[in-house]
Length: 480
Image 1 (cartoon, helix red, strand yellow):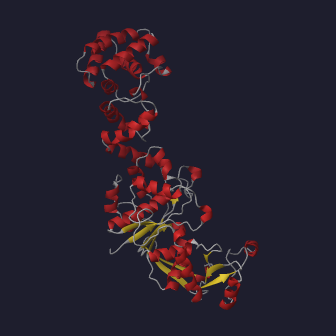
Image 2 (cartoon, helix red, strand yellow):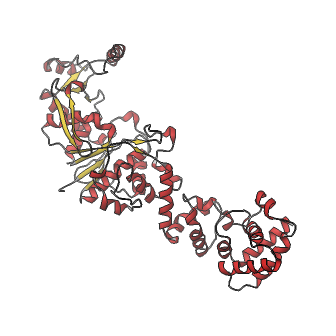
């Protein structure tokens, strides 16, 4: 495919929504698959909704996820600037072209009048649209009123008959009757364009070949197609992505869970897992494969396998994918993240080799990265207390004596491995004429303070002989 240019164009109104990340990701995958260009454009024409720091947050989240843009703020290309509030002269000039060609008109209706029209339409159970009162004002009269300082907006002059037809890579041919379209505002009283004008002007100016965005923009597309026709410009190719849904079928919203990319980043989800998960919210590879790297997604992605129906955001599936991607990482890779997390809790000075052995033992049990610091804390400090249920069940009057026998064997052991510690414990059980389980549970309680965890003998090997004996001594002294 020649000269593919796509864009992700968020408004700086806060955090990056996971739906926004999916839109960005699909644009990115399509561009990279076709040796194209991925552009980030900030659509800040609604200044009342702009949030300080939102642009930086958007860029940070995209960068963290590995969805790097080729052109955009801070990466200026030949089509900048990439922030709409810095491009106002483009929109004003293009609006004048439409007015001069009788494709748009000045509307002088006050907000109060528009509200009355709206209330009447609601009372009559009609569609809420502008009643086109100003549509036929002669241009000479409109010009005089503008020059006199009367407030106005500019509206597009939608044809009253006919229909708009366009092709969508996901939905096929879409046809909408002009009769149901509103005379959309293009230029507001403050001189800023609305989304509908700015998006068309900028997509054309930046030579966008494919417009890939969420399904919520589908009803607006006929207006955009009309604007392309009014200007005499070639249409881009459209693709409208399916909605993201909560498990109950409702539209994904913060009321039912986290929707910000930074929330999942903070909770310790790997970027590889989140990207893998989000890629599958609407797309599939056509077979049973589920684990993909970003590059593998680039190699496989196509819109032929993007569906029309809504995609359910299943947190259990994300958790499973995160587990799989954790397991795919080496101990060295995980250590880079785990070590600072341990330091935040005050666990410092632990040797890297030791921590990597802990990570190797735990990573098959971990769902999110903070679990390395909350699960099995006995790897980082000696237990000062003991699980009450485990103590009641597994620590009896003869337990201290039994542990003393095991400690003697462990103290004399030169090769303190999982295999030898298990062998010595079972030998002690035979000498004491008790089952191995009668010793395993209290040894775990003494060494870790808890009753559950990874394989006991592998835990002892990681802790080492000195630490194991010290903890067993403390347990005997404390529990009697």
